[in-house]
Image 1 (tube, rainbow, N blue to C red):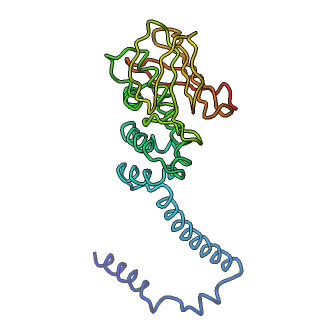
Image 2: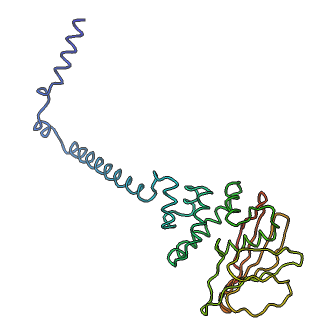
Length: 269
């Protein structure tokens, strides 16, 4: 036991500062290789500290990892381009994305619409790619097609109208302030109803002549049902006699709710 105590005392005394070599002795003992290793160590520590600080600040500023969905939604309502559409759907989920879609369609300023148009289009595409109940139900509520008591034809046409014009279902008047008009070519047995369009609506038979338009015109062709669950609708938007575009929309019925799953531009002028 006494030998163990003496060994510990000798070890402790060897660690005392007065036994350590002085700074000058350290310097004199260093050779070029040792100095190179010291310089590399100091450089590595400095680089590590620099990148740890700058990387941490960048992530917090750009991605806002600690932000709640409510905070993210509030910021997106100020600028919808703060996150990519994929990031919006993944961070917010279907219900909050629906709230953003509803909000975005109500803002009519040119700056907002310039940013919002492409974001909205991509959000609708991303939600339509998911066959789960949540995204499908969110889309059905956005398209106002969740009511199973309504005829499918009405829900399909309302879905197509909102898909192209937004929930406000409004098309700006022409330069002479003539309001836009909605013309629907339908089968004789098709049930007519209110699509919520902000302007006059005419229901016409496929071969029925229509009067010359006085302003912008939106035309819907008869619905082409491929199956009971799949439909196709051609829609034409003419802002002036020389400016417009034609679109082909494919819709699917998922869980008794109609959603747009594909859009193709057929012509533009």
